[in-house]
Amino acid sequence: MSSSNYSQADRFAFRTTPVPESFPARPNRSAETTAQPPLLQVEGLRKVYGGLEAVAGVDLSLPFGRITGLIGPNGAGKTTLLNVISNVERPTAGRVLLQGEDISALPQYRLAERGMVRTFQISRELGQLTVLENLLLARPRQTGEKLIGVFGRAGRVRREEEAGIEAARAVLLKVNLWRLADAPAAALSGGQKKLLELSRALMLSPRLVLLDEPAAGVAPAMEQVLIDTIRGLATEGVDFLIVEHDLDVVASLCSHVFVMAGGRILTQGTFAQISGDSRVVEAYLGLKA
Amino acid sequence: MTGYFVAILTFVSLAVLLGFALNIQWGQAGMINFGLAGFYGVGAYTAAILSKQGVDGVSATVAAIVTTAAISALVSLATIKLREDYLAITTLAFSESVRLVLMNETWLTGGTNGIRDIPRPFVDLVGGERYELFFLAACIVLVAAVYFLLDSVIRSPFGRALRAVREDDVVAATLGKDVLALRVKAFAIGGAVIGLAGALHAFYFTYIDPGEFAGFVTVYAFMSVIVGGKGSNRGLVMGACTVMILLEGTRFLKDFVPFFTAQQAASLRLIMIGTGLILVLIFRPSGLSSEYRLSSPKTADTTS
Ligand SMILES: Nc1ncnc2c1ncn2[C@@H]1O[C@H](COP(=O)(O)OP(=O)(O)OP(=O)(O)O)[C@@H](O)[C@H]1O
Ligand SMILES: [Mg+2]
Image (cartoon, rainbow over all chains, first blue to last red; front, side):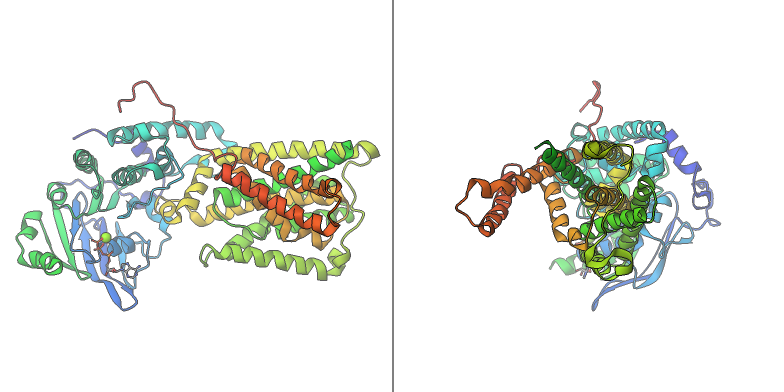
């Protein structure tokens, strides 16, 4: 699937202007990438709530150019892991490296600048903003977000907004939300909110997207769109780490899967490998029983 | 009677400015300011003290705006490490401290006696009788200017980011917004407008004392915003007028119901104000007007 969810020019502008250090040229996928630090590296990560160790020492590494799955029974610590990786919560111990840079101490908003964005398991739409405004908000480096830009560069702000609306429109058309562009996000259904969150994340032209159960509540007809969208972006160089209970989605998207249970990585491998692993079956059955 | 209406309209202008300020701080950015009266006092006293020192009215007003904005930024910064709702407590404490300083630092503020004979700007250009009218016109021009400035802020991506912070600051941060900077800016912008209103207050009354910067100012501003519709400046103008009509209209109560004592009439007045507000909110629960929302340019080739 080659269609882009937003214009190439847009993506290009984002990639080349700021913080060149943090956006090295994309490595050639077929070539060896050993010299390159992995896209994301998690080292000895722990998160303790009171007496509960929700994440109990996780190490994992995401090389460039992959859609990775993260599965595990309820309460395994998947959401907590995403929270800590994305700095929504501070780790008790351990660190997170994004393209070799320790991001554990960075303020949250800096992660988006470095190309990492996430969605939430329980949708966090900006309810009183319209669907379109939710997407426009996410565009990086807007002149109109500086007061000096609002008053000093009105023309440029207007052009950026127009370009933003075009980009947002392309994304929203694809997930069938354009017809609701002017509706407050609070009015969407659960599944639509999920699609809105994904669409909003994409407006950032991210390098790595962390998705927490993106398919939950999404209508079956839209689920295929969701899969196609993610796959299409992956071919354009966006990587994903996807927490998902729907194993069909995981099987069809993820080339590598981590299995979590009890705050630890139980095992990892291709979907075929892990689904044949007796420990994985046990972890799921053990908790379901 | 004309004099009375000129006075009322001047009061309304000041109330509208305070409402504008609260609307950007609370309506847009979701930052509650229970200490609005204190910031108002800072603006008024800055203008008054400087004018008494011989500074011209325009410069004194600018100084009041800058000082109040800077102090607002500091107060909002002081709460960054605290949970959000602590801003409400901090601002309340701030306004109480302002009141104490105004009452006790007599060398600077005149203490409870206040400051008298504050020189009015341009008074030698616009002679005595027409001054009130001139002042009202100046207020209306300033209200219009602030309205247009704030309107472009609210409609801008900056305003959108403020609303995002209000809706969910974690989401705003994960989308790359510097939440702290946005909050401080929103609070400072509001502070600037409060400072302007404070300066106008000092010049209009030519006399100020600490009692004028007490909680009721804050309460009236909140009433204007709630009645007008949180987040909408157009609604706010209507809201401030409604509140002023309720406040002033009920003042004449004692003339129409002579069988009440003055004290009973005063209490009845408060009851009527409360009832009026409740009625507005019953019929327009989200206020008279709703906040700005972008409407997209729908095109004919929309396929969905
Ligand atoms: N803020 C918190 N305070 C206390 N305990 C928490 C908190 N967040 C999560 N937990 C606990 O940590 C453990 C891991 O929760 P987490 O939400 O990360 O699991 P999960 O794998 O995402 O589960 P699910 O598949 O149900 O979403 C659970 O036992 C949960 O109750
Ligand atoms: Mg979860």
